[in-house]
Length: 381
Ligand SMILES: Cc1ncc(COP(=O)(O)O)c(C=O)c1O
Image 1 (spheres, rainbow, N blue to C red):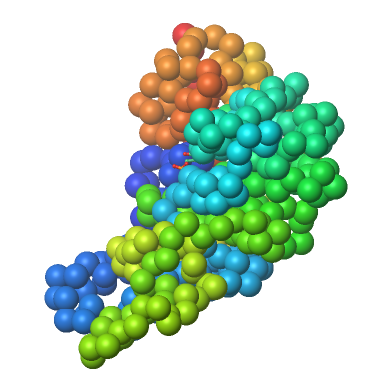
Image 2 (tube, rainbow, N blue to C red):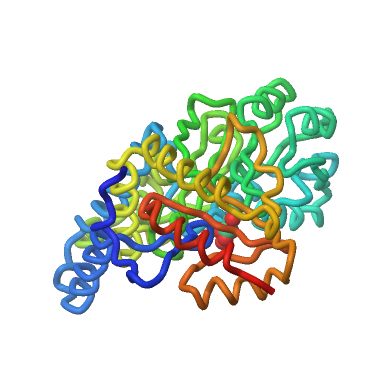
């Protein structure tokens, strides 16, 4: 059992089973925001250059630690879309180039590439036979023109987990970059992207990492780093306010740092990033392998307890690669009616693509799942 309930301030009369939408902010992150608000109220704290370096530096370090990657490979972002656009716009794709995506994927994984079709590249949207594209389906879709395969790791609308190793090997042998959206996985399942045949891992910070909304990250592996051209030169990547103190600044001779060269502007966005660093630290210190074990135990308690006369659990995918996201299709009553019923009973879930999505995370307990089961199984049309 994980001893982390005291880290959160969730109301005792409700059960939050919706990490796939938003993770709650832990107390330590809320305290960090309060401290940053004080800094902004009394801006002499911001007169110095150190906080502008120290806060993004700390965030980069905890993210690097979380996914066992060097800090230079971590891009600070405000979303997963930031990383996806960074890569899409930095590859110089043009006529003849193809990008393979899953037709049922989250829009963030498709839109950055679709936007480029105006410049002549083509998006090949492949419909998976199951919940996620298999390695064989990707192999069939790849041609000599494929430059990128972009997929989610844990699927937002099926909960199934993509075979990163199998798909990645196929991409590698076709010399296509494998771009992975880890928004629904990172924080709930362990990952060390450098040990996998993948090139890019993006993610939001506000779901399984329990950061504020408007946070995210991107990991660029060596192949991606070589191919993605920076589209900006941000002054804070090469200078600090201290460089502006005396006259005679020669911008022609400044040297941008490799670390952070793809970061979003305003990385010292104190309210979000100081808190995000605390949230990631909590997940990392708890240990993602332990979080996974805890979450999967709750998910199987849920799946085993649900009344099959009332709900279809559907296909959860390869049992070797499960996530804790569970989808239920009500057999009696509409998804909307069941959602309203659960909400009235204090159970917070999401309705997605005609099914109820339940996403337990490390702050949830067996008692939470028992309450959810009582509400689910007590629903009568
Ligand atoms: C897989 C996935 N990617 C991305 C997002 C949204 O993030 P962004 O706004 O960064 O695209 C979500 C959910 O909101 C998601 O489930």
